[in-house]
Amino acid sequence: MSLQQTIGLVIVLFFLARVLSQKRKNQLNAAEFNFWLAFWLIAGVAVALLKQIDRSLAQLGFSASGINFLLYLAVVILFYFIFRLRLRLAKMEGEITKIVKKIALGDKPADKK
Amino acid sequence: MVKVFIIIPAYNESVAIASVIKDIRAASKEWQMVVVDDGSSDRTAELAETAGAVVLRHLVNRGQGAALKTGTEYAIMAGAEVVVHFDADGQFSAADIPAVIAPLTAGAAQVVFGSRFLSAPGGKKSNIPWFKKHVILGLARLINKIFLGVSLSDPQAGCRAFSRAAAAKLDWQQDKMAHCSEIMQLAVKNDLRVTEVPVTIIYRSFGQRFSGGVKILEEFFLGIFTR
Image (cartoon, rainbow over all chains, first blue to last red; front, side, top):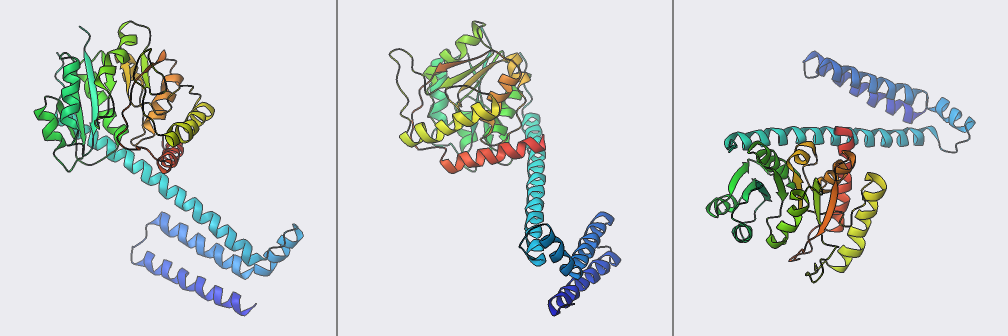
């Protein structure tokens, strides 16, 4: 295992420890805990198997190294998360509009003549 | 007499709102005006009320599409037979309203869009800035045609009128500026009889810029996933 992989694994272990400690302090709900646990475990496995990922990519005909691949993957995942966040915001905005509309119409009941 | 409701969404329009209401009142005393004050921080609501309009208030700014929706729902509840959407900034002409309403009262259409690209014989032409006319609105027209199946001359027509049944049917969800295209798309999707009539827009500012067009596309794209 290279020095970089060792450093990477130490970082992953640090974040795993933080996830466990936050769960113990009830700062994370079950769904969040499961997500972050799975995220850091997958990151740890990916760092540990970096050389195998290198080889697999080479066999598939890609010239990029495993670490580059993980970076690209991270960017794609980040974009996805931003999109999800944007969607969530759009839904919340829609809900706010419904409330604002209800209040506006409630303040001035229509006089049907 | 047909019950006509003019819906005017207004956000910080204290400069123009009173004269807009006065002009509409001069065109007809029978029309009911509903100003939806979209969370203005100026005296828009107060001035509109003094000028004789019914004022509905949004506690916070939700956008033109949302304000029009609130006003339209109010009009339907109040027994409107025709609902007209009109701007508060004084760029529309109250003199165009009878022509926008006419196809509805004649039973020739259920939805009427005012188009600044059409001109009535002897009528005044809209002074659309060149870049807006040929680039921004040209692109918008193309996008409406390709993605929404809408083939109307004015892709962002803001002056429009609906029969009561059409107004109740068109349930647009876009709160901001993308409501224009969504209303057109819904009218086509619901097989409503749509027509266009010429209207004159008096440009006092450039209005919606290219970046605004990109924002509309983004809102529309997100709207696909939030419906």
